[in-house]
Amino acid sequence: MANLDIPNGLKPYKTLNGHSTGAVNRYFVPATDGTAIYVGQPVKLVGSATTDGVPHVTAMTTTADVIVGVVVGVEIETADSTMYRVASTARYLLVADDPQQVFEVQSDGIGGVTAVGEVADLVTIATGSTVTGRSYIEIGNSTITNNGDQTEDVMIVGVPVRADNDITIANGRYLVRLLNHAFAVDNDGSGV
Picture 1: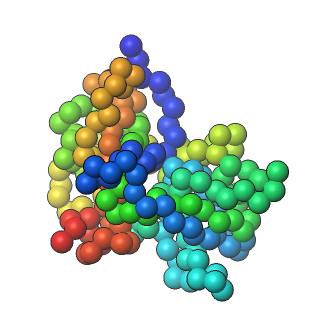
Picture 2: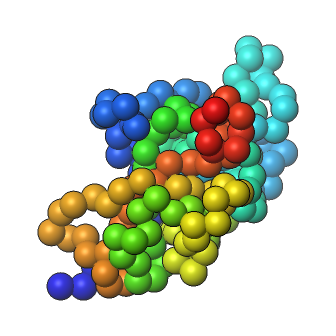
């Protein structure tokens, strides 16, 4: 059976220490930011905050960005609020920002179990669905490497085992952790 080709960004799966979920905290994107931000998309700190101390973030724009976490929700303001952050609108985001968080993400190609333990970059970084509000981010299968310098975006730590996921064919799903995390001890993903 073929895997469904439904890229929907990074979805929290569990933490490295086995807890079901990591921390989720509130962040803010001011109206001056002209980039749309989708659920499942990584964000990075921009070095400022609201007057009540909520940190400002913006969307990850390139590989090797120092990431603070992944958007898991956009706060609703009115009945007409979108499920994603529309460009140039002020919105509060809920971000999974625990550096131990493991995420599930689709690959854009054919992988295999040999990818576990490797590092990779994310692709389709800046786009998403205006209908579902979900990011289109996937693992760039051609970027999977054992290069070890950890400048890539994610480390593949496992595979979700279930009937609808075959990683030996296109669009398999992996479990990953973010490298270059803003809250990691050393920002290089090694955790030391």
